[in-house]
Image (tube, rainbow, N blue to C red):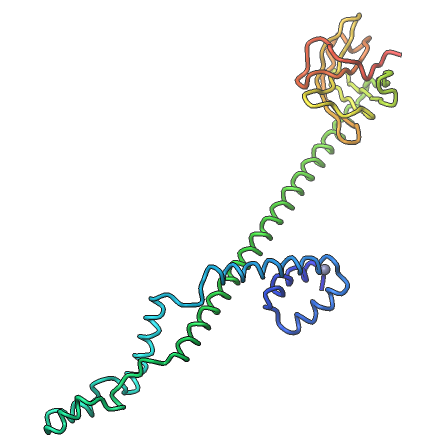
Length: 291
Ligand SMILES: [Zn+2]
């Protein structure tokens, strides 16, 4: 059985709810699995906490209503067996003779309902309360297990969805990059790191229509509120491009449109700017195509 299946048995084991064969299986798995051992001890702590909380909250004495219902049930049982007051024997005896009336005033053993059965009552009360407590512990524990599984499943789903969407985005960017790079007449320009970050570099590819993709590597993470911005510099005059950020490895990509006047002779540069970009550069230059 895989480790995951054993994990599902741990809560049941903590509540002593496993069959003997399952328990033996689980115990042999526990000898070789530290993760399951530590989860089991967590579950045992939870189960003990639940049992304690439930006994604390519920005194072993049953409520007045429950006690009344038990008494009624026992009385009904006694009636069914002919032990009720006013049995046919008593009625028959009354009115026949004066001796009969006298005898009616003296209770006969067979006419008396046994109202006191202390041992039976207290034992039934105790077992009833323990059973109710165990049912409650079981319900709370199952709810807890379901809640936990549901929460883990949702976290896993969110993580996978984020991964899929990242992968799709990357794939889309790569496809677009390949399209641009392989189109006839596409130009490639290399941007080198300035003295701020000499190991940084980037490639800018743009096709005849100006559709461009920039792929940068080795940039430090942009500080909060900042982003890298691309510039098209023609005749010393910078025209703003779009902004991008980098991932943890220092890589970033950007889709942009090179203005017509920058397609033939321009210097491309990247500076660090406020995260929404600016109309003319204010921050330091990290990358440039000027040699
Ligand atoms: Zn395991």
